[in-house]
Image (cartoon, rainbow over all chains, first blue to last red; front, side, top):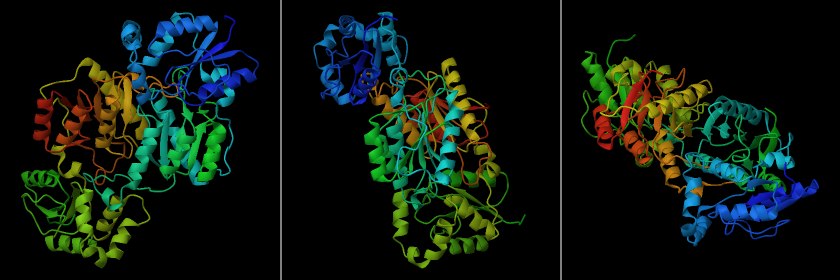
Length: 288
Length: 288
């Protein structure tokens, strides 16, 4: 492998800085390339020049100038901030390069980005590989631990995820009193948790009949279970929980979160755990 | 079995009348007991006295007066209309009977209703049993039939539902270009279809990254697949599609609907098929 720093291409949130700090703590070199208009403005160790999400050629040039040995993609990209970026001049200037990534014959845009970076000589590495300490350990992280009932729900949740894994779907599920309330497919964990909150706000009589079908029953208790899919590409599809997951889990009336140890990243772990403690939730890394 | 008409306890929509017509067409007796404030006001064959959803004892008395040999529960109960009913005097008068059904120690309210009816001597029968002709046949019902690509998506959808069936979850799924976009758990098929519509309205760049995770890609094509769960109790949990399912499927940008032949009821079939034809969708009963 080429020598030189690992480059963290940074979207929003604290994850890029956490990764950089982990790599530095191991005594390895790192450089953070913030995506303009998207990455956090707060300081991060070894911050390098910023790049544009709409200028792939410019990003490659920046990676060359940094002498990067490899790349990690990390952080969030929110739509409103993207709108700002889109209004910039790059949208016109680099239209063809953008199109080659976006319409690359693959539905998965991010895999297109990975291919583009690797074709230009920069191997893309996964967060789990470069910062394994950020992944959930096999332990109870909160003051509260799960009840026997919650443990049964957690086991059922992992059964659901394992049943689906071979079909390349199912990173998370919500189970309450043995009943599967929600399964995540393409909508994301946050949207799934909001859905459960909404279902629970329906009154019991409103749920009595719908073409003779009971809609939902359990209003309290239950768990969020999250795990990677078998064979999941951690470079482009990293299961994450964090403080916002904790807040949404509490809002959905659930008792806590079980994640697969070593398979799910806990972003801003200290904040997530203190939020869970203050809300009375458990957060546990489980080896299913 | 006791002789006497089959009683259809009727919520909203056309399904109760369709069931009554089917039973009559076989030369058997039927009586429809409309739920007050909830059942359709339009005429239905063999309409009997109306009952209140909040007066279980009164419903039993009405079933006795009708000489019913058995009961079918059918039709929808919508929350706003329930609100009207709740404001009535029954809410006070029959509080204890209601509570015995609603808090019967079982999460599933409708199973409580079934137990209550059967304990009072009225066997509860499933729609599939009393009106099998309303279930989807094994055939293409629309002008359009499914493409080879749609057929692959349908097969994947049935794989998802079969994987989950043993866990008592998963009546429907949406698959597009081989990717599972949504799986129904407790939210219902309509809510799942609205979710897919929402996901597809997100622009492609807004979906690029979210903690490094691709959110959704395919914007066109795909299928809704629906099937009963193994061992499903058709008396209380009947998989249904109808004209509104067709409209939501089109709004979600999907190409059509595949249902398990003999396992899913098509309510108002002629209307559902003509709606699908006018929207260019396929609707097919499949034996997976």
